[in-house]
Length: 498
Image (cartoon, rainbow, N blue to C red; front, side, top):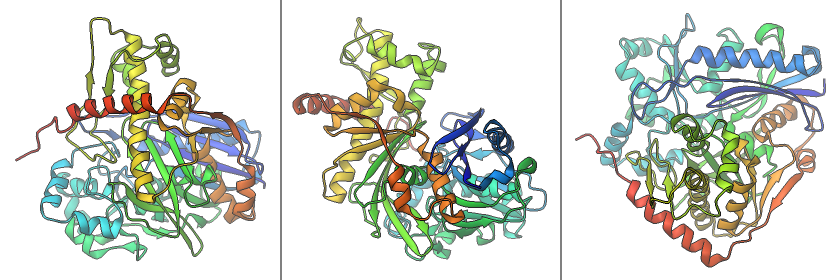
């Protein structure tokens, strides 16, 4: 039993990966998910599709690896965070679609909380800013807008969870309602300092405590053997939100180390060790992980639209047939021709936190081509990440030595080189690109005895390629200044409700 099954439940797909004790991928299975966009700024998913796709790929990955359940020591789970699901405790039926982390429907509620002078209260207790990104206001919306939801919740008939809790509930046939501390820390309801749900925050958001799951650590026996889909009866011993899992999978185990994940969004996370560092630059203070009594913290900056801008070029504009085609199209021109694309499709995340921003393209001339737009789209991912990193360096009072990167877009060499050029530091792509799933596997494997300690995990990490900066600092500064000018034109585009 030297293999781990990692479940990586993401925004655009459900994946399952089997790793061996060397941290090597043995098999992968994946199914895409169908997003729902009921109104501008609203993003939903079918919770049943999330569960059915994830359970199906779990079985498929084990089969593809040529293994049986008896060969798997444990399951580790990493999941899209903040996505909010409420279901009936008796039937397991979702009360409403999952409201995805990108959804902005609670912008006016968040603005009202801020007007009431509550920003410092939430930041001090949760480490978060008041923003529609987080699960708490999404949960409040469901209670306020789904007929009968609040009455049912107050009678203890409903359960709330982020995607991890929803998966565990279904794994156990409704026997266990639990989450881990990293996912709990993304709800606006969890006090970082006490390590528990906070009754005062629940009261401010009018959320009954009976809805909430039990909070557990990231590497321990969460579900005993005997649960699991389609005969995969094995324990779940590791669980973390996807970005926390990626930090662990990148072996960023020393304070000051930083990783950036390039997926639907971009998520940059710095390990700050045992200190919950308070950001002065509108970044998030969050749990990195908790293993036994050892709690580690992190600074995080979230970019809402990264890979999503490439999907827009493909699906919305039809400029490319496959997402992978964007690199060749962008590389066909030497630069973006003065064009800047601000992909604020669902507002701006860190460090701007503007739910009313919307996408903008500036600098267009008669000579602007599809290739220039493609290049501007890739560069927008880099510019947004640079904004986050500069804020992170200011908070930590240190200069980054290197940036470890992961996620599907890191296969794009043009993107990675521009990231190194703009930041002026080496960008390091790991040998194992599946770092989110690998982190979940490591957390599970530590509890299951596959790895004895984090030293073994650190020794397994290897670089696949290092991108060294080649752009002059003057040119990088000028390019970033142009981005900031474009950014100002996208901010505050939507009008808040009176």
